[in-house]
Each structure stands twice: as C-alpha cells, then as structure tokens.
Length: 107
Image (cartoon, rainbow, N blue to C red):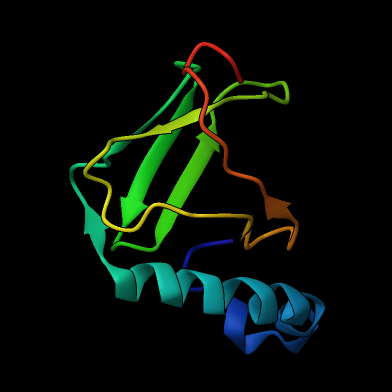
C-alpha cells in the first residue's frame, strides 16, 4: 500500500475503530501544544532513561525509554514557575500524582 492509497480518514472502519482514542488524546495533545514547548525544563528525572519535557508553566511530560516500568523522582528547579502544592492529575490515566519533597536519589 502506497502512502496515498486508501488514506486513513477515507476508511470509516479505521477511524471509527479509533474514535475513543481520538476523544481521549486529541484534547491532551491540544492542551500541551497550546501551552508551548519550553527548551529549559526546570525539572529532571532520577533515572537517565526517563526523560522530562516542560510545556508552558502547567505541563510536564515524562517518557520512559526503557522496556520496563520505572519508579522515578522528578526534581523541580526552585525557579519552576508554578510548583504543585498537592496531588496533581496524571492526564493519561487520570490518577493523582502526589508531589513531595525528597532527594533525587530517593524515588
């Protein structure tokens, strides 16, 4: 199949199959995109295989580049624009993440 043969959005069986994914992830992508990527993260992970990016003053994205689940600490720089003061929602799972002060080597 060539890239221009049978485009995804011309095939209802494909986009209808994935409709719930669009409903979940498009608003998340839009919010992060509108916040704007920041080249200086002001945050770092305790694990070198877990990357952190900052979008605006509200969002951190965390990417685990290893094949296994990781437990990490995210250290915020003191100049981070709006550090969390309590639980914050993890936007993909909907679960709250509890922020606490701890050394980076203690996830």
